[in-house]
Image (cartoon, rainbow, N blue to C red; front, top):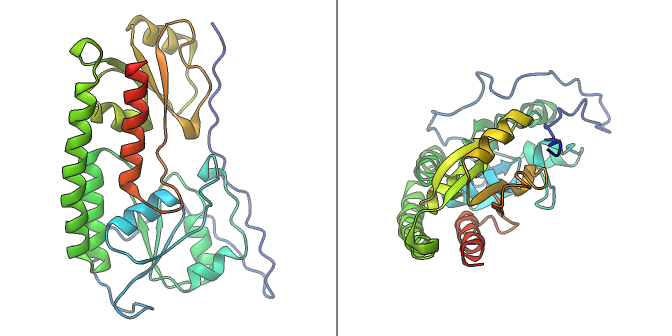
Length: 274
């Protein structure tokens, strides 16, 4: 069986900052007690009543936009294949210095270092990057309360639930032979299998997949493999006959979270119809 290799995100060693005064970066875990996940205070906004949000990636940025934030700046470019590998530049500090909130995910090792280096007094907010419908709704609602944009977040959530329901129906109508497909999914792509109403026979990743794991997954005889395009390792089950579907988790430059679901639905429908 072909050897499968999975790239594990590396932690950037040191941020190379060309500043007049040398900045000493304190190596602090992303999941520290400084992460503000419950404080609903919106005092001290730097743009009047609208919070200024800096997001490490377009994924966090899309959650912020859905929650009602209007001024959202993203550090990692959408073209980055694997965001945790990004090395922040000195220019990234400028945006953070003027932020009310800095949004990051726990698997991104550089968020708190950036904030500390910039000397920012922004609230550091850990975001649960999970596109499962219920978790996305909960996270957008939470951020709306944090930003003071509850009404906008509620409007988005209402629209999201309606459109998500439509996508689920369309995917169910596309089931081959009218039966829920058996799927093996990369752990960060399970949400797309749930949206499709698929039978999730097994999962893999994000750590390296062993030969035994691959053998066990192949024995489940899945019709499809829902891979994660951001952490893809090539053909996952090359000898099983399963169709591999590449799922995109990160939104584009427009920070349209709903587009992620629509694009995934279109990709899955094409795979089931081919």
